[in-house]
Picture (cartoon, one colour):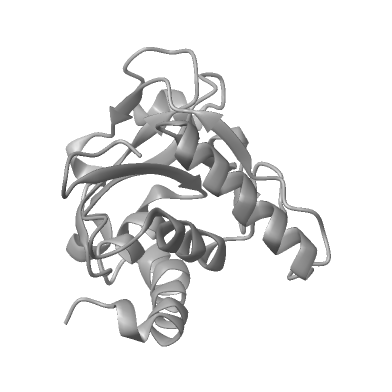
Length: 182
């Protein structure tokens, strides 16, 4: 786990980073969530480049959290509950490799925990299709442009926020009520 005594970092991709950011910012123990890009070959990509599907990057979030308040395993449990890990390069109407499901691990412990979580979910047959979530080492994370940060908080009435993020947040809040910041 990449951490000092009270800080750790997780990097996840599961569709649009606005959705992931909005959810993780509400969890007790999460100190910061940064939307960005990772997993590709283009250094310091722009949103337009990533959307083109030619950079290899995924929209992702980098989560800084206190492991004394929330575990990496809990971060992963939330991840698998807020997106469909069985659709290759797609989340809802967002289609392309930039919307793939991926866990970008910071060390071997994270890698093993992610692989174990996937194996347990597959054994439980939660979904009718197999999980396609990649588990790969993080190479470099590039923060997205400023206008992508805190997107839902700043734009709650935009159609995408109303139709996609708000329902996802409602379901998340119901399921993880005991883990929410007040």
